[in-house]
Length: 232
Image (cartoon, rainbow, N blue to C red; front, top):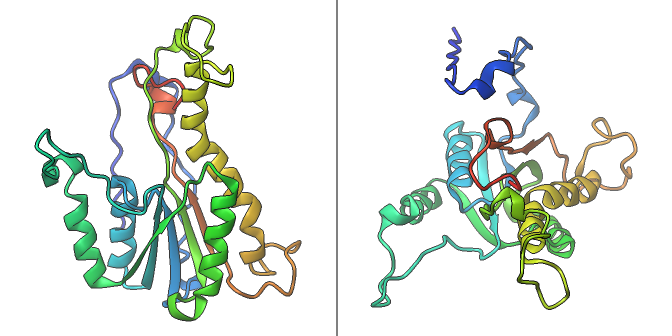
């Protein structure tokens, strides 16, 4: 028995939202038990939650967690002491637990850079024998850079970057880069990984992997809005 719980936000912005009545289908049978999962933004809160949930299914043995730095972000105090787990949501501890449950590979990849995405997919292809075929991709990468909406156009900014681009334009590009551009670069370069049944236009000789699921993470802020985050 499946129970669906629907929460209704009090914001007036929710008035135009309707509950989904579409059929929920189970695709578990289509996925191999020894496949590799790639999660961009994998060392952030959303990325690790997703990795944990997928490992809980018992179907995935390899998790490739990609991020710009290739490590859990930590801040330091004035004395140079690493931050406590509370300041980074306990991500380091959760990563350590995940590493005991499956094979975890940490990769550096800035999804706003096309060459980084291409290089990452090439590395996964070369590691197919040890990690298994890449069959699931989750794009959870993204950055937030709050800026007032009136500054989004750059017309009211006095500061400019060295190339003449306004600071707000640069901020907009940084926010769009990892999320929107990254999604496009994955979409553009993943076709060779799709099976012929999923993508008839894919080269028949590309047998390194067969993508069965491609998830794109968005945000409720696109509906409800967050202050100073129109760009996000």
